[in-house]
Image (cartoon, rainbow, N blue to C red; front, side, top):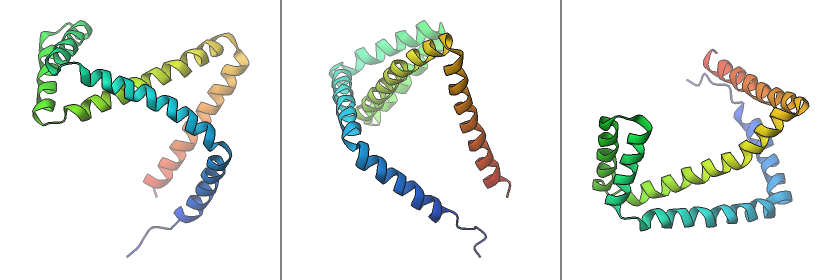
Length: 149
């Protein structure tokens, strides 16, 4: 028995058409940005893989101790990283860390200037906050519509 109303097809068609338009019109721009990010990502990943695992684990343990000031946290982080190596997932962990570092870099690159502009311009802040609140309200409305049918 199917109790769900299929609303996905009309939404999927319009989203696919919108994505197709963006790819056709701006695909080259996105590809050039992607190439730059890929070069950065590969550089960071190779740099992380070049560091010997024991040295990397020790450095992260020291970083954990500096952040938390608890030796148990530092030991737990070291044991977790050692376990990742024992499971032969070290390369995948370095890939994940590289992706996270690039994401943090992009967030800072975009977020700091936007934050400064928001601090200096009431109009820009109002526009940005209004867009943020609209997105939040739309997300919550959709979530409640799906969860509380």
